[in-house]
Amino acid sequence: MATIQASSSNAAQALHSIRRTLGIAVFVGALASCGGGGASTDSSPTPAAAPASSPSSSPSGAAGTASAGCGSAAKLSTGEQTISSDGMQRTYWLELPTDYDRNKTYPVIIGLHWRGGSATEVRTWNGFFGLKPLYGNNAIFIAPQGLDAGWANSGGRDIRFMRNLISQVQQGICTDPQRVFATGFSFGGMMSNAIGCEMGDVVRAIAPLSGSLWSGCGTSTHRVAAIFDHAMDDNTVPYSAGEDARNTFVARNSCSATTVPIGTNGCVEYQGCSAGKPVVWCGHATGGHWPPSFAASETKAFFDRF
Figure 1 (tube, rainbow, N blue to C red):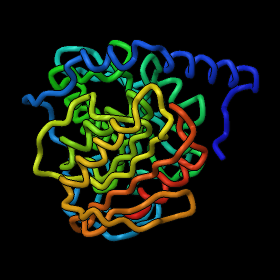
Figure 2 (figure 1 turned 180 degrees about the horizontal axis):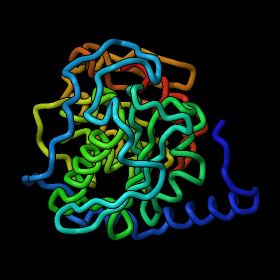
Figure 3 (figure 1 turned 30 degrees about the horizontal axis):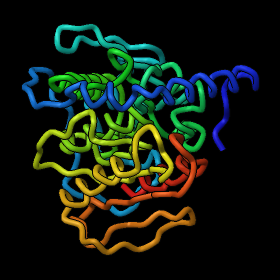
């Protein structure tokens, strides 16, 4: 179970604040009118490409391909980082293992905040959606800060930001370019989907929580593996919106309509998908607009397959 990195009182207040923010009735209307997405050019350094396929399993921190930052003294350290993207100064939180090894190829986990949330809340509230306690010192974590309360991705600006920060991290510290993953909740889940639609050349897999395609879904010949989580009684981002996102990746990855149960939490995996590009759906009856308690364990189990 994820460790809450604050007092019980502060955690309860944070939880109440997050739920209140996400329950605002205008949420859907605000997103629907944001005009998210849109392809555009980017002159920034190109991150190392993810593979077309990969082994079915790979333990966290195992040897893999090496980024440009491997073997040298780290150029980045744990803390807030700043980078120029689209003529703006954008920020993200970078968290290195306490025993960081410049010769170890670490997977990278990108955690994207919800509407009205922040990079600070992603890393402090429950440790990157519960993933940090599970990975411990075997992964590098990134929490980007969105613009205008979230991830509208207007004109593709947030996609370019993601490419820029991934490139900066790969050049500054030792990572495995074949194991870059993105997850996020609500608006962050939407941005995870946008990343999956357009960044399969540098991102291996995504795990949207209560997301949709409202941050855009640009065209790309590259594909990602994907695991989705959504509650049927979600009154903020409808279950049907999550299904639409899932169906997009099922089609892109050439999966059949046949599914088989996996794990112990009601998730199913689509069959016949392109090699190394599985699609998993974790739909559940209750829970509202909130990740279930099993989300972190299912996400990590999925990411660990690559």
